Length: 440
Image (tube, rainbow, N blue to C red; front, side, top):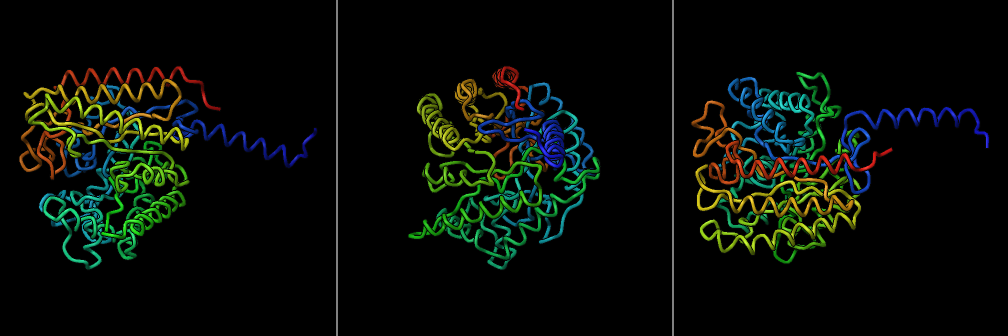
């Protein structure tokens, strides 16, 4: 059949668009897999939440350290960094200082330029960034601070507030129009920001892989009202992810969720959250100690059962990805050192967790399943406990957030057994990517 000239022109332009789309440097989703420049691509990553804090121009020692850390990670095989892209000034004892948003609509340009620097330097090393835009926890201000700015009283600190009360109060964030307006104004500003170093709008930066609605967003809970609470949470997931896509069609959007543990403890809720059309891929976190599966003081006897529960948790979430037809990333997981925090304490338990989870990921990926990679929590690099931001020239210290003890979950550049495990896993994931057929 001979096509009319307008149809031929349309097909020609569509082909040109597809060719450009396939090689523009943005990570995209094709079924259960990520694709980069026409090739299957896996996340070989870590969490480096503090990148913007190191990169700010007022912190030359931090910038120098950031360059060293990025070089170390590149050499290890890392291609993805999950980082903090929003922090609200908050008075709780363990909140991050300095903050990016010092008051509603008032921004710390020094820290934003630190994020500019991080984006530039990651791009120079072919690394992609996952940037979270809010936080359920007060360590970066987040939802507790947004609620406080609306006049609801002081921000709650998760360490001191009763757990039921923390959840009850935080559940109101999703329906508080004033808090939502502040949050939306912040991420609209960031997506429209012109990077002072690359000259590109953030929405046009190929070094960015995706935006996350928040770090570990939970629906909260109210006695006898969990169905209504979860319905409001679902509405927020859908409307916020759609808004991000409307502002920025280039980047992926995901939740930042812990998974089942962040969905009122049901697999069904986790699947509902990630079935939303404007959520491009699935994420979950895995914290054996935080969830009571592992005790550092009894590491030898609790590590076995903890590994069994971790394997089950991971496989259930990967099965959800297979069912929903979306990629899955384990974007936070970690464990204490054996019997202490210092670098002289062994990492046997942590290494066993990493080996276990990497085996699950590789098995799924090798059969074409939904496992799309991981980001361990977290990279501490050249930092050493017990140093903190207060006694460190680069304003950071060991790498852990201020609410956690220095060295609690950080992997340091001297942890040779862990580095060997990481390097081996990343090499195997690269081989899987090379062996997979190109995407047309």
